[in-house]
Amino acid sequence: MPKTLTTIICVTVLLTSSAFAADARGKSSQQADGSSPSQDFVARQKAFIAAQERGDAEYVKNAVADDFTGIESNGDTTDRAEFIRVGQGEKPGQSAILYDFRVIQLAEDCAVVTYNAVFPANQRDRYQRMSDTWVNEDGHWKLKFQQSTLNLWSALD
Image (cartoon, rainbow, N blue to C red; front, top):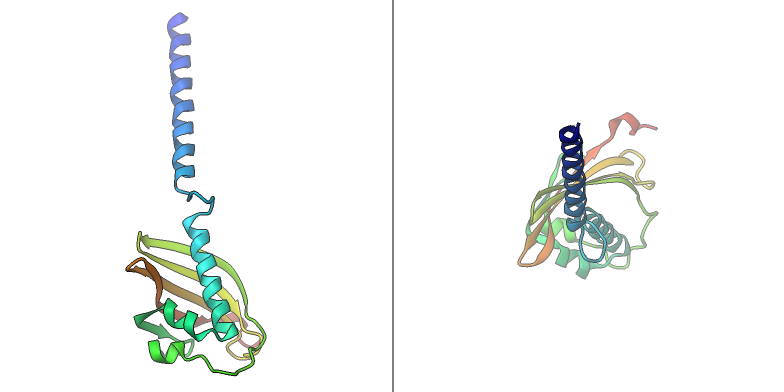
């Protein structure tokens, strides 16, 4: 009986210490300010979209990589020069509705942010699934690739 009790105590201590270690590892993956890398990428993505909407050409230009490539919802490709073109004096339209953000960390210096977007002003291409690839170049996060895919299930709503 004492041997069984000792075994139970040892197993309990082992499991408890393993649980605390796993919890500590989970907390250490969060940054000092309490945010997670995923939250940082979503915030970066939202800030970039907000800059596009308000026509902040300088912000957009600084956030897009020199070798950027984009694939538009119709399958056409776009380069950096076409993508960063922000119309001066254009009145911003109705803001897009953005939701269901997900972050896939590919490496320490590369992540993909995917999200759904509803563009109220664009009847045919209103519902889209967006995927943006961000890379860290010399300490600065840059948008390297973007693909827009129509959600055809709702394109003609």
